[in-house]
Each structure stands twice: as structure tokens, then as C-alpha cells.
Length: 368
Ligand SMILES: Nc1ncnc2c1ncn2[C@@H]1O[C@H](COP(=O)(O)OP(=O)(O)O)[C@@H](O)[C@H]1O
Ligand SMILES: [Mg+2]
Image (cartoon, rainbow, N blue to C red):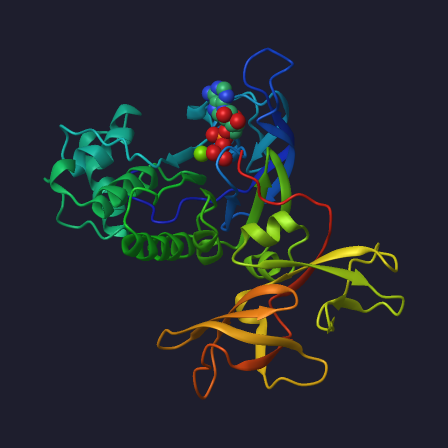
């Protein structure tokens, strides 16, 4: 116990059939419904979804701050379902950093060790090591009120790290920071997680943040898992309208499955992606297209005819809105010799990426 260990022993997390209902009334809807997933040791998995979908509830059940109504929770191969928070070797970083305002940074970081019986000198030595991990060397004597938002976030992080938890939980840790700081802090959290080999469950409603930090993403919708996968899989192959819409900007178009197996989108044949295997001829489908998945070509046979409605040059990309038979279409174009002018005729074709076919009739991302 005398030398600070830089790398906590990471443990995996597993949820098996976990449901949660707040209160005793059976008429209250489940906040979390039959959720099962695994987070491998040393990896970062994000729970992503709109407000109220059950992310915090799931995280709090992993932490032991809420009891599941059904199912079991395993950490490091041990069933911890009935254990309290202190018996799980788990640390949580909250959106509100909850620092002690009257204690300096060193005392804030060392606090958790001291209350668990570690001698003061050792606790402070280990606190300094945790502070070094998050770039807070030399800030020992500052009060939280003398720190920027980003620095306060680092203190919260150091305070969680110093306990050398087997798993680290983050609940929207960056939402109190401005956009630029959010971006750099999320990179730091990811770098730290990889450097120390931490097992992390990370909650956010921000898909950009999820794509940037995660090994795997679990998209939640109304208490249930909508889809699980790597950032790439979820972005390129969303399994539903909800996931397609939530994972980034995408326009959804009605399409039909032809007898020859092709997917017809207006005048276009969607060639780059296969329709769901269960789909039958004539079935209505939806095609989700990212703004960067359109290729602008000269107007002609087989293309979707388009008239430039709006054009904007943004340095490295150009943004267009086209009028088409499918309605207005927003396009982000990376390579083009010149900017098309409003009123010009062009054609649109689909690229090989950024296009996904999802079953129609599935609901969209209605906020609740
Ligand atoms: N302590 C609580 N008591 C009763 N209902 C709650 C409580 N906490 C959350 N809920 C409800 O559970 C659902 C999921 O909430 P939450 O897990 O906080 O979602 P998220 O973190 O994704 O925004 C919501 O309908 C919310 O109102
Ligand atoms: Mg929440």
C-alpha cells in the first residue's frame, strides 16, 4: 500500500437482464427494461441516448447507488447486485463536480483515501500522483473557486482516479464546459483511459462525444438498448430510423425493394448497401443518407436531377441545398473545383458510404 500504483487493476462489467422501476407502483413505466451488455476490461463503452432514456439510472445501478428491480450486475466476474457502493471498487465522476469548496485541491483529491483509513502522508502522496495524471501538478493549494471549469473537472477526475477503482463511471462529465474545452477534455479522458488501461462506462447524450471517445457505443431509447456496436458500425450501419437519426445528421427517404433485390430511391438505385435480409419485394424501406454521402455530378441520365437553391463556401467544404423530386436535400461536398451557383442544374448520385437502409415504420427520435 505504500507505493502508488499508476494502473488500477481493470475489471470488466456485465449487466444481465437488468430492469429498473422507480417506486412500487406497477403502473410506473420501467426506467430501464431488460438491459444486457458487457464492457471488456480496459475498454471504454458509452451509453448514448436522449434525455430520459435511462442512461443515468443504468450507471447508478453499476455504481450501487440504485438497486435493479430485476437482473444482475457483475464486476470483475463477481456478482455485485446486492453489494453497496463502497464494496464494489467503483468510482463515479458527475456532471456537477461536487468538490468541497473549503478544501484545497490536494485535500479534495486525498479525501476519499483519508476517510477510508489511509494515513495522511500516504494519501497526499497518492493524491499528487493522481493529480499528475490529469495535468494538475502544482495546484495543491488552490481552492476550487480559484480554478477554471476545466481544472475543476480535472480535480473531479483525479479524485476518482486516486481510489484506483476497478471501473470508472462518467455521467455527462463535460456538459458544464464550453464547446472548445469539451473537445479537448474528451480527448484527454480518452488518452488517460487508454494509457492507464481503465474500464470506463461513459454516459452522454452527445453523439459527437460518443463517437470520439468510445471503443463501443450502446444506444438507448426509452429504457431499452436500440443498438450496440463500434462507433463506425453505428454510424455506417444503423439498424433503425432512431439510431440513424441519433448518430448524426441523416435525411431519411422513402424507398422500395424491387423484385430484383435492388433498392429504389426515386430515380436512383441504391447500390452500395444491401437491404435487410428479411425484406420482401415491394416492401417499403427507409434510406438514411448523410449530407456527405451525396456526389454532385452533371445533370443527365440516371441521376437525381437537382437545382441549387442555396450554396455556402466554408473553407474546406461547400454546403448546398438542392431542390429535387425527393424534396430539398442538404449536401456537404468536400472536393469541388468551384462553387455551384443558386439556380444551376446538377445531378446527385449516392456515394459508397454514409448510406444505410433501415426498416420503415419504425419510429423516429421523438423526445420524451
Ligand atoms: N429518482 C427517480 N425517481 C423516479 N423516477 C426517476 C428517478 N430518476 C430517474 N427517473 C426516471 O427514469 C427515467 C430515466 O431517467 P434517467 O436514467 O435519469 O435518464 P437519462 O440519464 O438518460 O436522462 C426517466 O423517465 C426519469 O424521469
Ligand atoms: Mg442522465
